[in-house]
Image 1 (cartoon, rainbow, N blue to C red):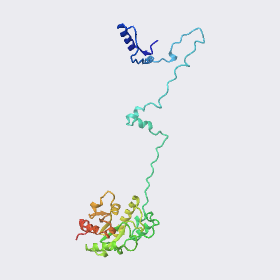
Image 2 (tube, one colour):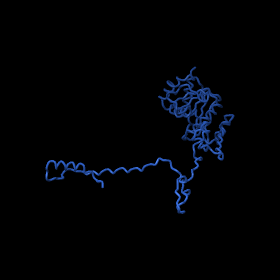
Image 3 (tube, rainbow, N blue to C red):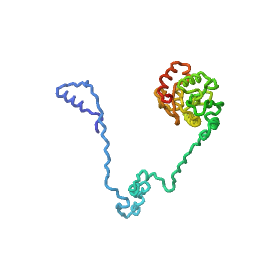
Length: 302
């Protein structure tokens, strides 16, 4: 019977004690009996000889009829037909078709799903307007101005030399040019030899009640502005305020770098300045506008 523990070190110690002639042995050493590692189970021999079907094996014939039982019933099962899961035919590979493609290709009984027809969004009514009045009538019924009420429409002559574009109409209502900001801009552009009768004003958002304008609404308002400009046909458009600058030209442009410079929107020469309402109450902003920003533009030079 094999030993469960390894006593090799203990035997060595005891032999040393006997060799020294000791009559007494004290097992005071810090022995730690270590269990022997269990031997690895032997693997059964693998028979690599080809198996012979039972039906082909020799069966001795005896005189006992019961012993002469045919082993055909207990022979190995017939070969399984693997044609359904076999590798794709060589013809598919030669044709350039990958094995995976041939495996998952639709069979004759399954038709590929038909592609969905592209849905074309109907144009808004204001896009087909043929006059400024028809344009204003169309946007009043647009979802952008649903339940808004009275809209602030364009004020000024036909084909103005300068069109002032503001984010929204004045909160107090009434004509813009009667407000302190409107009067200030008439005087300042008058100093550039642009008379009041050649100046018009329009509003990016025409509702008189302030509201938050999401990005999707901005895109529609930009389309409306482009259509409105096609009827007003100004020589130069001036936008006011950094928020309006980004609404018209996008978030990717820097307002400080482009303020006062020559730009263009929908084929119209455009210049962007600081907020007109803030400018009317801040002398520093007036000075920056007329001494720094406007001199950058070639649109106002004689």
